Image (cartoon, rainbow, N blue to C red; front, side, top):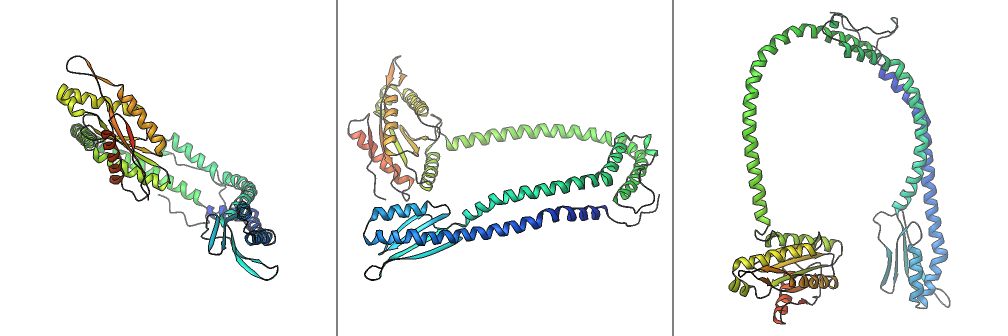
Length: 438
């Protein structure tokens, strides 16, 4: 065994020095100076914009306020809000506020301008606040930063090419020689040590350390091969025995897992699905309704709920039997699924009563959907006990979400009241509940 190689100069130090000399001098200083100058120019442009607002918009707004010309004031406020970079404009006059845009938590520049009428005396008319968004300036800077980054990339690319040549000469060719040795080595070749074509009179580096460690590993491999052959024979018998036990246990566990997964899926289905129609049960329907209300309220969108009830369903069960009644409910569920959108939710709330959630649907569109459902269901026919075909109709109550604070139960209650009004009005019709004040 050779003596350990003493510590020497690291090759990574040479690569680090080359990186500092080539890439840092080419890119970092130039990029930093250019970004600083560009940022100052953006601030100057923003201040100039505020001066233009003071010279042009402030006198016109003052005149519009003095003459109570609301159209002119609105036009000027819209014009201010459309100026590139202006994120928020607010006019305070006589206790009233006009706003355009949205308030900015951390603006780049925010100015307040006094509005007054100075002909024949000074009369204060209010204040005008103009805010320039920092994000607008950042967007402009990002565009310029891209150009600077491309310039910097060119410098780094040049530096990388130089470093690539150096890395090729210092490291890569030797690593390839080591890789070839490792790929082609076999039991017979382990007796031959690894040697590289390097000048003998030089300071040693990590490559020499790797060659030394590689040859140490080669020697240990030769020593361990004999031990390994003996141990493999001993382990093989034990491995065969263990594998047979593992296969048997794995098969048992897989069968148990399949049974448990099947039971889990069935329990989940039963917990959320009506067993007759395959629709959502009441609890699952209420969960979907509450989620849909939350989503529509957050997006400031309308939502409507429908309550459907089969007309004279008790008479159908009494005269034709419960099996015929069940066929009618299944046919109704299938027809509703065919007519409704993918994001609409339908559930069986109990007996012959069904509920429908129509997200992002106002009362006018909901009435059209309800009428289409009513007409489609009125054309359905199911076999009766006597060999004939039985038709049936539904009454539908409709309610639109009245505001962000209305609960799911309150919305369904209003739809249910509209349903009973449809029943009392002669059945086979759609009644919309009046919209309550939020």
